[in-house]
Length: 345
Ligand SMILES: [Zn+2]
Ligand SMILES: [Zn+2]
Image (cartoon, rainbow, N blue to C red):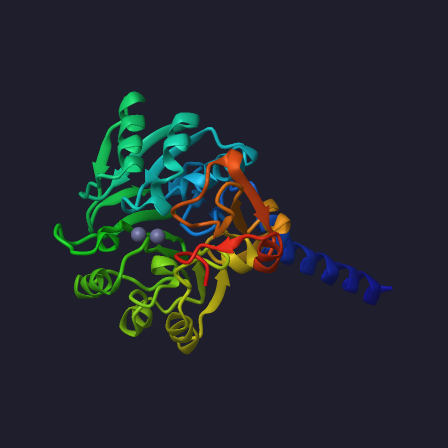
């Protein structure tokens, strides 16, 4: 009898110790909710050949880095609308190339915008003019971003600019605003189209480049992601934003080999669709979502009048009303269409 009482007492003590010791059971599915609340969620949106990255910061604010090409402006705006986005607190237009700013005029028209960051580099293209007009007509201002500037921070995260570090580059890609987000123990590096010159400057400036997730520079082009740069970043995961069968053959094999050599796991929007990374500051969860246009596979676009077909990222696509879509090159050729030499290989 006495023994039984003792056992009971022992069980009680054990139970009390367990409850009040702060020993917590963490269920990962509860820690990571898809809403973005208290988490950092980064969406590498599949918008063909180009970049567009939507970020839900852990404090509830949002950021959009680039807006892809104009032909995907609806894809981008629909994606943001479906997520319930009303306001973009920090809009970053990394550099004035069409595959990065093409969709931004519509985004600015459709959503509330906080601050807009751009490099100190203009362009005389129609799309750049359109972007400036849209910014002006909404009464917004441009904040010029340089290496060393800070976009945002609170107790848990910081959002910093690492490049550009110069004001005179030969190549527009090197003007790209490069940013890093550090959320507790997890970090992201977003490099736009920055190439080797900018990468070297960032190394020389001694920025803390080490990051868990790298948005690979310039769609995986061989003139970005040097061995030296990758060895500083040492990403566990590398995300490449590129269009299926794009005319530049991005990503290049050399880049993929270099990423492999440092042991990074590669995700590609041309293969997997939209790549979504969710983190609570220690765990990292990656999921991929194939976009609708992917499953329809309307990759080649023919011109009904000239009977020439193009890749979807070609610079000389026919007007919407003159277009006919093909799933494969063979299908286009069988229908009597000839390939556009500049964009079809
Ligand atoms: Zn680009
Ligand atoms: Zn570019």
